[in-house]
Image 1 (spheres, rainbow, N blue to C red):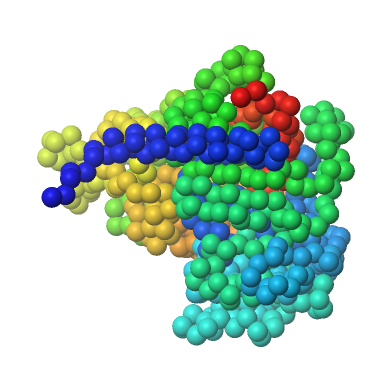
Image 2 (cartoon, one colour; image 1 turned 90 degrees about the vertical axis):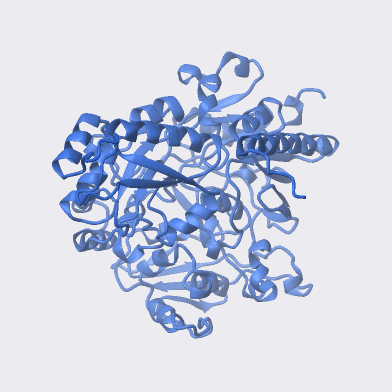
Length: 612
């Protein structure tokens, strides 16, 4: 006889307890080793989906791969504003006057981490590895969620390769194309159909655009996502999916020394540089990432010194504990007394709710459908989300995010408003009224109006669900919730199977245009998870790509933002001010603005650890 399943709440508590016990066991088992080895212990709030760059779109997985693979260029860890500098490239790129042709030299002698795929040979990084890695993103076999971004760059010949493989034929990796090619062993040449003044930004950031060796992919086949092999400072040691990922120092990592260029008046940055300049990287021996989705176990794990840092968007301080951590924006005295470090910058990110524009209820471009989305937007208590749930942040007014071009703190729109009276008036005006007296509005044709909102079974999502329901109850719109794990919701929204969902998005470069890709028609089903299609918007977007930064491009940003507000395929909600907390023994941390690589740039000072 099968025993009855435990109630969902009990199961969640059991899982949360197991996560906390697992973190404690992990700490105890490595206490002795920690005295000799420098182990950085982290925790993520969501599980990873893959470690194959061609299959990744989520931030959590990208935080992992950024420390294994290496792009041609990187962002200076301490420079503010952001500054790009070479990583595996030998100097900055050369480009033609029209920004269509870019040439990059690669440093000779860089090698991949050892792997059975190399059959005992040391494998040097060559230009062809970047050619192969970039082509993988548009191989239909991988169904890469960022394929549209690479096709949108318009590398000469890449679209033809993609089109030839769409009918089920194997993707042609062997035929050279002008757009991405190796001129020799250490020289890359990119040729673009249109000017790309900011093309270098697409070559910086190792989470997606790092070099991949073809023989590794062919050696592991369908299991490649569990065998990431790169040239970076760390390599994968062990992986228990959705539980714990362990990285170790890559013993074959070349000699790389700490260097940075903080601003002269940046006292904190200058102090970090003075302490670490010239140190060989990475400075830690091992990084352990535990997946702790529930907020209370996450918070307790840090307070009990079982986690060294709650830092970056992947493993931040749970919002419900923000007031305990930094009341009034200042580090709590009980944490300061323990030497814990706290930072709270304004993120280059946004929380947003996405409407499926193809959905017969919430989608569409007619005035009545726009009115419904506007009413839902105006009826949602954005101020409560920021102050009561996220415990900090500012209302978002448009798709662009702080620290990027196109973002203007003076730009105000209906997107940042909470006005339930106007929401009810809009619904009344367009025929969304309660005809049967049951307290819920119907569609203009008299059919039931029900909005299905996707969600996750974690504490933060439950609080957001409660706020959405309370807000929508107040304007008479029935909301029902469909819970699933976050990776499943991501897969479903990209397939056009969700009606409505709230998530978050972070900038990956100083340019604000990638945030607008969520509304670009050709990216529907990839970055454009709303499936929004508006020719007028697409024309603006296409023009922005080829223009250098300046007043003309800024004016187009304003037009694009106004269209996003007018049609409302997304309800942008808040730019977060997440809290980063670090134990006293974690030294040298500064929150990355756009990039994700930082583990190799911090040190563990065992003298600051309390005696066990």
